Amino acid sequence: MYLTLNPTHLYIHLEGYERLWSFHLGSCIEVPLNHIAQVSTDLPLSTWRELRAPGTSLPGVIKAGTYYTERGREFWYVTKPSVLTIDVRDNYYKRIVLSLHDNEAWRAEITGSLVPSNGSD
Image (cartoon, rainbow, N blue to C red; front, side, top):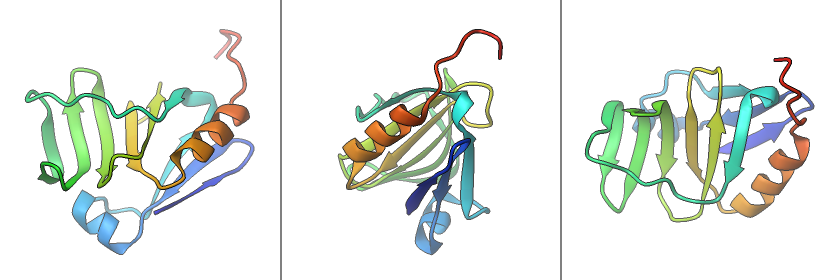
């Protein structure tokens, strides 16, 4: 997996096995920067009330795919503890959680690219 960022969008590019385990048909998730509410390196808590549909889950090894939670639809691809959590508004996914080796650098870069909302969206 790799991320790219331009002045208006964040692109999350999934490679073959990531698409396979997450059951994601497309190779890219596109998120407009003005829809990103918050970016952190904290791993969100999971509950038994999440519905995985479709995806893969093996506790302690992988959590990948689309999950329906109390917050809404989320995309997860987590295989290690260093994560990037992106909370999104007005988008297909309400939250995106990814394992990234350079998660702190991406948090800083994405946060620095966000334009403060003035309430006119």
